[in-house]
Image (cartoon, rainbow, N blue to C red; front, side):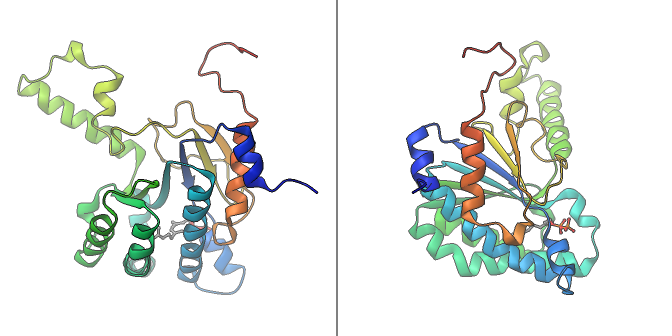
Length: 247
Ligand code: FPP
């Protein structure tokens, strides 16, 4: 009998510490069923639960989900409203369970652009789950990779202007400290669903040496087994970080 994927992951021993996910295909999932796009986003919330539980089971330490991009603000207002409501519903229905499982949630991005109800949802989730030590769950909301780098440059320039920073002293670590993800290791593995081969302005700085895995399923159909398959795929890779093979 074939070993179950979790046993294989554990036997291999090299579990990615940080997994990032581009959750793509909600709209196609819905239109394929003759449903409005927001139905796909609601179904996508179930897949978020699967990904979080699967990450805990596999021993992943950090899970970073792309929930709403800077570009998503250009979608029809009705879809934006649905996604904001979804954030509220997720916070309301999941915060106790997340806290119970030791999941610490952080919402990262230009959170000030959210409406007051969505900001309250963020506060609820972050406060209820503070100190969770099993999994750090980053929900990237109103997030864009280029905007994050521009924001970092602006903050560094301001420090130089105030003569608190010498331009010569700026290095990769200085820039990293200005990112939303500061203090976290870069993702080891990026999973993108729906078969698309794009980075879509996600974590442009942090993905420099990340391994990519593209899953063919649309996000609402994503199950923990798909995460396990991505991790097993990652475990077969040789990471060289620009150096030569040591195998
Ligand atoms: C991309 O699919 C998905 C989004 C823009 C939203 C992602 C949000 C969720 C999965 C809900 C998660 C909720 C919480 C609270 C974390 P798309 O709409 O671009 O799909 P398409 O490419 O098929 O049109």
